[in-house]
Image (cartoon, rainbow, N blue to C red; front, side):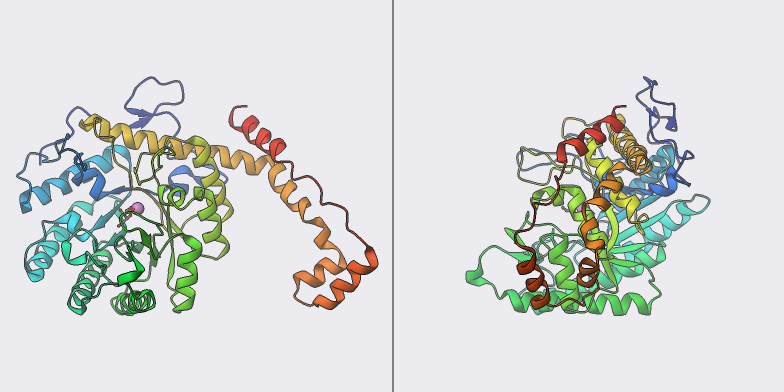
Length: 438
Ligand code: XUL
Ligand code: CO
C-alpha cells in the first residue's frame, strides 16, 4: 500500500521552542501529569466524517480539498482508500481512536442489505489494519439525519417505516461498534426535534425516541456491548428545537425513561456554547450526575450562531475543560476531534496542522489544570465559601433532617442575617491567569 501523506513525517514532541510546524510543542505522550501519562489522560480520536470525508462543501460552494485519496469517490475502492489514509494519519500523529457514522465508512446503497454487506467488507478491512497497531474505535453511531427519509426525525419520525429503518441502522452500527472494540455508542439527535408545534406531538415523539434507545440498549447488551451509550446534546441546528437541548435536558429525559444506567453524555464544546452555556458548565452538569462519558473536542465562533466545528485553540477553555475532567477522575470515553479545517485550509498539511493544534491545546489545558489543582487556592476557596454549612444546623440541612418550621424559627430568633462573604471572582480569575502565564 502506498503512502498517502508522503511529505508528512511522524509527528514528534519537540518542546515549546520548536518552530517546526509538523511537531508537537506541548503534547508529549509519555510525560506524566498527576500520576498518569498524557496519552492516558487524553485518549484522542479522529472523526471519520470530518477528516476523511468532508472536503469543504458548504451552503455556498463546493469542495476545496481533495479527499479522493487517489480513488474514485462513491466506490468501495474509495472507502478502502479512506481507511488507508485514516490509519496512516492516526499513526503519524499517535492517535489511538477513531469515531464513525455508518455512512462515513461506505457509500450507502439503495438496498440496506447491500449497504450492510459493504459495511461488513470495510470493517473486515479496518480490523485487518488495526492488527499490529494499538488503534481502536472510540465510538460508533448511525447517521439518521442526512438522508431525506429522516426529514421528520428518526426516533421522532411520523413514519413507522422510517422508524424501522432507523432501528435497522442502529442495529448494524452497534454490531460494527462491537466488532471494532468501541468504547461507546452515540446518539446525536440531529433531526430529533421540531420546527413548529402546529404539526408536532412532542410527547409522542419523545416516547418513541426513548423506546428506540431502550431497544438499542437491550440489543447492544445482548451482543456483548459493555460500553456506554451516549447522548450528545445540541440545542439547535439543524432543527429549530432539538429535544437533547443540553446536558440537563438530556439527563432529565434519560431519568424519565429509565435509561440513565446505560447512558452518559458526550459533550461537544460547540454545542455547549450554542445552548448558551460554557463548555465547562456542560461538563460539570454531566459529572455531578455521574454521566460524564466522552467529549467532542472542538470550538465554536462566538460571533456566529451555528456549529462551526473548529479545531480547539482556546487554551483557557481547554484548561477549564481539563479541570472538570480531572476532578471527575477522567473519562470512560475520550476526546474526539469533531472538528474540520476551515474551507481555505485545504491541503494535507492542513489536516495535520488541525490535529497538532487541537492536541497541543488540550495538552496545555491538561498541564494548566493540573497546576491549578496542585496550587489548591481555587479548591480551598470553594470549600471555605460553604463553610457555614459545617455548623450543626448546616449539617442537619445537608443530611435532610431539617424542617422548614425549625429553620424559620431560627431565622426569627436570629434577626436579619449578615450578607455572605465576597465571591472574590476577580481575585480567582487573577490566580488562574498567574498560573497560566506564570
Ligand atoms: C453534529 C455532531 C455530530 C455528532 C455525531 O453537530 O456533532 O457529528 O458528533 O453524529
Ligand atoms: Co459531535
